[in-house]
Length: 415
Image 1 (cartoon, helix red, strand yellow):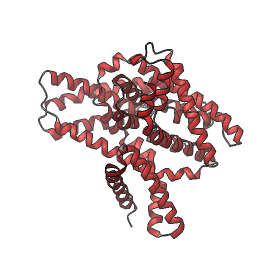
Image 2 (cartoon, one colour):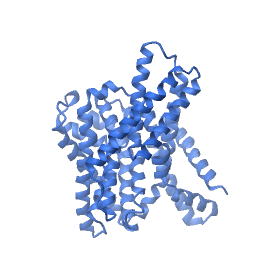
Image 3 (cartoon, rainbow, N blue to C red):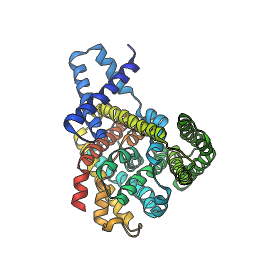
Image 4 (cartoon, rainbow, N blue to C red):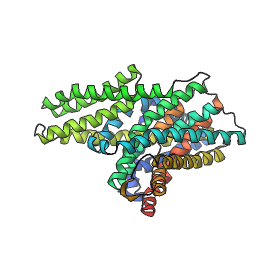
């Protein structure tokens, strides 16, 4: 049996089946429904295998268990998802909110990682788990960044105020680069090395990505502008995204941030060209990127749900899951509240406490956290790896399902 085709068939069966059921019955946000019901399906598949020992079920379960979400996401589709999420954002709005976005994406992510690492280390000492302080800091760098995919696909559907929604989306699009830089520093320490200097690494990751993204967009946009073939316009942007990510990987820069920069630069160039009447209707182009975004998001959330069974490998699963979730809320609130003192005037008349509470509950995590957690497999011991992966899954599931489902009510309460 072709395990790959079996897994693909199951993924699309769940996308269609859950989507139809959700449309007619539950009417949840699509991504939340896919994650929630796919997790149930993964547990059912595991239970069926445990009771029947069926060969087909065993093959399917093996495919789910060995699926490398880090390779699929970070080395595969992340660049396209980030471009799809950022291509409609306005560069002018980024400039107007640069201070707030910078504090949220850089300062708050750093503080959140350190807060989380320190408190989780105390939890490990209390529970007598085999953990080191660098390992806990590494977990903090995995948990701290909000997920750009979750933010752009879920939060924008809740009717948040324009400025608040933009800040949440912009923060999530940029802070993954900070999280990756922190992850590299702390993983070096956890592996027994000295780690790489944070400031040097950040300069290389961020500034290099910005330069590469802008240069490649400036070079390729004229081809987009001059061709009359609607499909070739799509091919130009696909080339732009893939090439920018590849060049950043070679240069040791953040490919994710480069793709966001490509999206912002492309949006600015497109807006200028349209204002001068140099571009026709781009219905085919916009339809393609919207469809691709929905498709990749759907696949990601189904795979996240199916692989949720991995959390069962975690020792002391109950108490550690609760600890991971509570620490995430405490550290997220603490980092945002500290950051508000550097942001200046907050939008829409929010005070520091209400602003911090709203951004704490709106700080969704997603596939990026799981991908980074999977990347620790060769760095830490097996038991430590299960703790990291289990905690990451617990936080992702809680923030996506519980916080995602209640975000609208929390916003109304805090308004």
